[in-house]
Figure 1 (cartoon, rainbow, N blue to C red):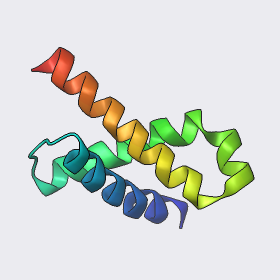
Figure 2 (figure 1 turned 180 degrees about the vertical axis):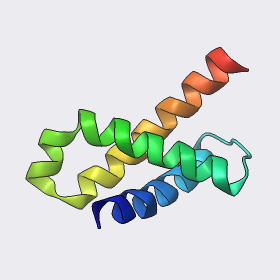
Figure 3 (figure 1 turned 135 degrees about the vertical axis):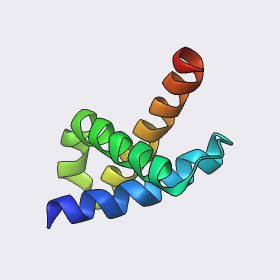
Length: 77
């Protein structure tokens, strides 16, 4: 069940992050960005997530996805 939650939260976070950062990507890339961001955000905000629950995890996923987009735009393209 946690993997399914990670995919769902990651997909939503990826969608929001790509819209905030104004990046046009296809659906698999958006989901991959979101899941990667959820992993980054979940690991870095683990303590905060224990205190506040899924809301902090979702915010961390969005921030992590935005970080991945920034790194991708800065160093890959």
